[in-house]
Amino acid sequence: MEKIYSEEKNLCRLAKARPETIRFLLDYSRSLKILAYQGFKFEANIN
Image (cartoon, rainbow, N blue to C red; front, side, top):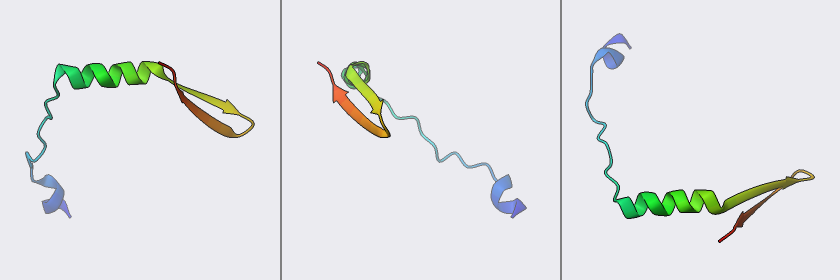
């Protein structure tokens, strides 16, 4: 087990996102409203 976890692996690469993608995700997260009522969760996308 020690040999498996002691080796350093550089398999992780950072993903590059376009500014338009980031803007879309931020706008969507701002407009998403989640309401909890009597054990139910309601999701609404408020434009």
